[in-house]
Image (cartoon, rainbow, N blue to C red; front, side, top):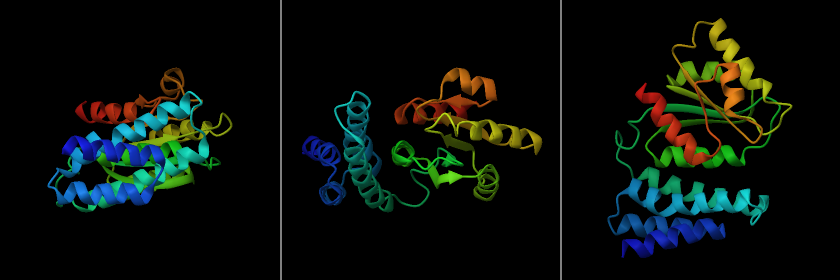
Length: 213
């Protein structure tokens, strides 16, 4: 029975159907499936498939947006069913798209996967200034600051954040992770970021690794 629900969950994401995703989420919870298992074994495979299809040109931006919306709808319902104190023990992450960049689809998927894997996430949205990242990290008592840049013209925002953290003596307090279409491991190393992730699944792995160091 669980297998059928997991398959339905993945299918709802692939179809970009928020109503179906919500229906499957409620059904899975109603049948006693563990909330995090429902997301990790049902909805996450669906959004991962969407990401793969988008990268190889089988899906386009409108479909990606619909899938991300469906994923958000499902995770909102499932996250609300997680008892307080559970599923949020891995660590705290703030994430946003750097200043000047208004593209946030990839970031939205990362946020969903982070929440599904037990991280407490503050999504700052898009076009976020360096000062806002630092301010939010302090207020949220974050463990990790994640920044996304989708344009070569905006990736300097990631370098500015690293400089700001060093300048203010906060670099040792917060780990940093960078991602986005033009971002590479070489760039991450050059600016002094602690981790680089080329996709949402890798972002989760890197976040877990950062908190173990």
